Image 1 (cartoon, rainbow, N blue to C red):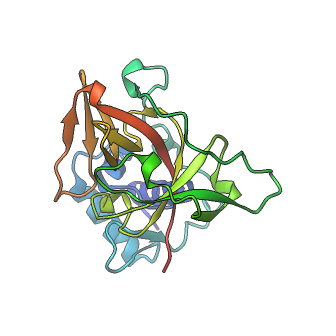
Image 2: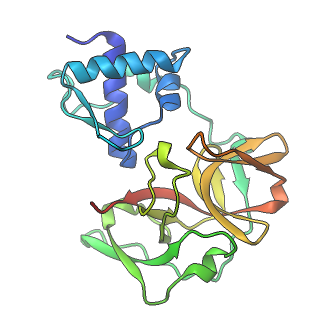
Image 3: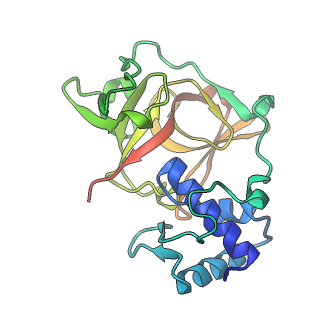
Length: 242
């Protein structure tokens, strides 16, 4: 039998995996369960492992797999205590950062409902010194499930480096990006810095500045003036080959 907190954490992890394709960070789990420290999350995860509900994937940063759910919760949504966790209000102005996304990107029309998969343009590996437009190989594309695309125009990028590994994004992964110049505070975005450097980071609004946060403690958060950063799209999915 699970404790209340073990139950809440298991359901939260399961929902996050289904919605994003990767496990939540310890910080996200701590906030969802309203705990004061990450050590409590570590203890809960260990207890769930010992009871056969969770499994940690070896040699992968923050990779969790839900083995099973409590019999009385299988197929159900998030537990009420977790679902009640506060979320940023969409109408709150500081939660939206606008850029000047270039309009000459070639997008892919919204797939028909009956289509099992669509081809997205592949913009190569994210690299410093080049805007997204310059990365595109006109002959390269990637096939993705149509269910991953909820509308709008999308493109794919191959990830280079480990700066987002604690968000479950590893070197060599292919991320699916929804084209746009607006992103919610805390979203993972493709950002163009000083019209030269393209990077995949978590976006934060800090007063009159913009912070680009890595998901790896080995890297530092970088802070810029709002006129130095342009949003070029928001992360909506991830593909990985084994």
